[in-house]
Length: 118
Length: 117
Image (cartoon, rainbow over all chains, first blue to last red; front, side, top):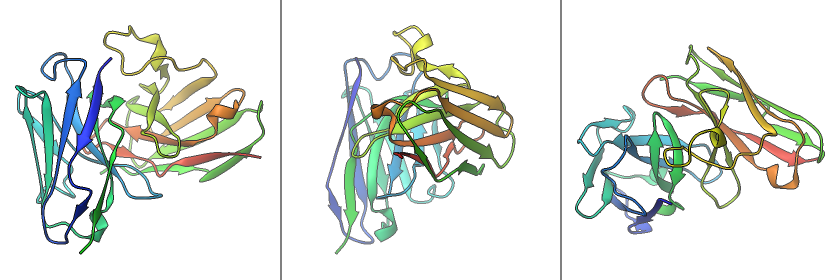
C-alpha cells in the first residue's frame, strides 16, 4: 500500500518561500503511469490543485500560481517537492501531496498545515 | 478554468434516507468527473471517477481507490452530474466534493456538507 507523507516548516514569514517535501513509501515513485501532485485547502474552504509532475519531468502548474511555484521530483529519494515563493496570508492552508491516475487522486498524504505569519 | 458549482451547500438528511448531491460544470467535462468524501481533519477519499465508476470496481494493483460501498453511485455527463447515496449511514456524514479532470487546471467544487437531520 503506497503512503505519502508531507514534511516542511509549519510557519513561514510573509514574502518568503514555502518549501515542502513529500516522501513516498510502499512503492517506487518511478513506477506506474502516475502523476505526483500538490493540492491545498485553506481552513474551512475548498480544494485547490497547485500542480502535478511526472517522473519524466513533465510538469503542469495551476496558471493562478504559475509565477510563484516550482515543483520537482527526486527519484533516488522517492520524493517530490514544492516551492511557493513570495507567500502571503492567503497561502495559509493545509497542503496535501497526492498520487493521481488519469486526473483523479487515489492516494493522499495526511496534509500539513502551513501558516504564513510574521 | 472550469468552474464547478455544487448544490446544495448543506444537505440535512436522516440516517437511512437517500441523499442526492448535484454538481454543475461551467463547460462540458464529458465524463471526466470524480467525487470525493472528506471528513474533518482527514484527506479526501475518492468515491467515484469517470462520472459513474465506483473506485472499488478496479483491480487493486492499479486502482485509484478501493472499498467504496455500493450505496454510492454517480451519474451524468457534460455539465450536469449527480452523486447519490442510497441509504445514509452514520459514517457518510461528511463533505463531498466534485472534481473535473477534463481541462487543466483540474478544479473542485466548493463542496456539499451532508449533515444529520
